[in-house]
Image (tube, rainbow, N blue to C red; front, side):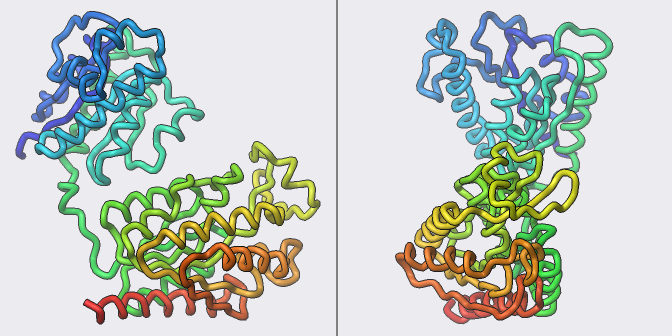
Length: 413
């Protein structure tokens, strides 16, 4: 097996002995360990391969000034920026086949930021004793990285610390040994990404079945705020030839701090690449109102709350938020380079707001569509279907529309 290079992120002034041990263990697995020292606190007792001075310079900073600074936020931001740039340089030079960060919460944060810029499929690993739930979600983001909770502090070299670091070395070495070259990861043509949630389950099944029958390769993503962002990341890296956005709701959820919030860049990737998109409006009208929602009071005030289980309840977005949300989606459409079509079921936009449900309100749904049309600066075809989202008529309209885009694109080539 050819030797591969694993970049090790850490601070040699505080974790030098542990990082050196990690490097030795990685080398024992037959790989090269490349230590990137992000120290800003003092003298390193062990040598590094990439020094803090270089990392600071890449961020346009002087390492001595950073060491003297009491502004920890700015220091961390600078070293993170420099490390991100250096990692990309190493990747471009063929000297980064995997990456591991070892240290406390700050190093885990920097590591996650560096890893977020690296391609899907390249092994990424964070080992930290600070893997608290409130932090982990931030570190993961939409990235394909692994996090190991080390339990004990990374201090000293007792048997427990050595055992944990040896496992870290084994994990990243094994990942690098088994990973395909990320540049070789290709999807068969034509591959279609599909977003879904439990409230669009039947629609998603119909869409997958109909697309498969037409010869498409279908890749579903759960639109809970993370998987749909990961889909966008993959799209931006060149994966997928089209998207069926059954559930594009991560954007409005981000705007109003819902439990399924993605972020405000949601939907950008497909529009920037110009690949065909067909949207349905699943859950653009509904949002969570269960006990885990931080700003729950506003959403239970209407009294129209549908309890699903002990953790989940759903209600309708207030009209003022529907109008704001429509403007957000119109802007995404206005900025998109490729073809987009919207399929609107008249009898409810999910399994939760079917006709007869507490949440069924087609008049309010129409407010969203009317405002969307007002805000559009480019032509958008909107096809209305006399059905609920979960009926096969909606799925058929989604699939036929995407198929027409794909076939039209082939014929234009």
